Image 1 (cartoon, each protein chain N blue to C red):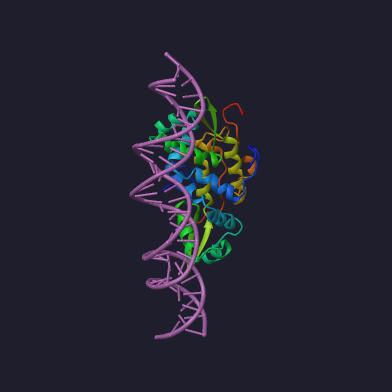
Image 2: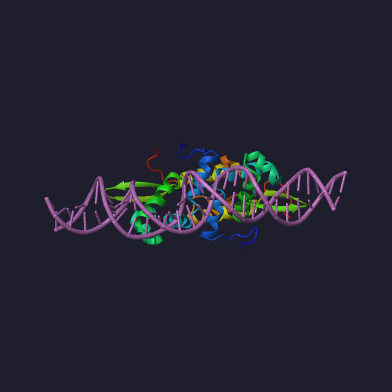
Amino acid sequence: MALPGSIAAGAHDLSVHFEGLANPTRLLVVERLALTPEMRVSELAEFCQVSQPRMSWHLRILRKAQVIRTRREGREVFCRLDREAIAAHFRSFARLVSFAGLPAADLPNANPISEGTS
Amino acid sequence: MALPGSIAAGAHDLSVHFEGLANPTRLLVVERLALTPEMRVSELAEFCQVSQPRMSWHLRILRKAQVIRTRREGREVFCRLDREAIAAHFRSFARLVSFAGLPAADLPNANPISEGTS
DNA sequence: ACGATGCATAACGGATCCTTTATGAAAGCT
DNA sequence: AGCTTTCATAAAGGATCCGTTATGCATCGT
């Protein structure tokens, strides 16, 4: 597992990450979560017009892809973007394709908010 | 269709783009093309250890995803990264998730090595 | 014209994803 | 305890993707 904030991410990791973003519904979740720090599963399901089990499944894929993180509070599960991981994968890909003037080290950090960096 | 170099890219466009990157073989193609300006289909097939028809299929997906561009010369087809489109999509995504400290202006520039933008 | 080369498409199993409804488990409320 | 809410999992059908081999089309060389 890539340490949060570290560069990391092999090619396979990267493809898994992009797979998380390779679906309109999941991308809509990302878009929505960008506007609100945290949202519950059922809220996201309603917003995206999909069944709750389906949303649960998509969120699982997003979690594996390290696009979101989930936090359980009682019977509710709150979802939020994992901006650190997203940015890290971003950097990995940028380095992969060797963007000019984009050495991975110079890329900005993702997010000042640091939740439990376990 | 998004004009090359323009910003463009709706959510659907974006998911199609990421789908292009959501497969290890295709990502390997991208990685390889980052090292050499242009490569032929059969060269990529051999490098990735897949059959030529399969590579042809992957390249078609990559083309639809606006990750690569192909150029026919005689009976050969040369592939190259579409760095402009990739950068544009990544800018769109970055704006979508509103990276803190990652304003679109700082995102990957398209021109790495100077390959003719013909 | 003929054969060889380079790429695209078709056809085929096998695996995975997308989406639904139905069911189950855990937590909160009365 | 009993009911409601919230999420996860299972089952099932349809679609798509992954990989292969076989075939077709266009191009190049002789």
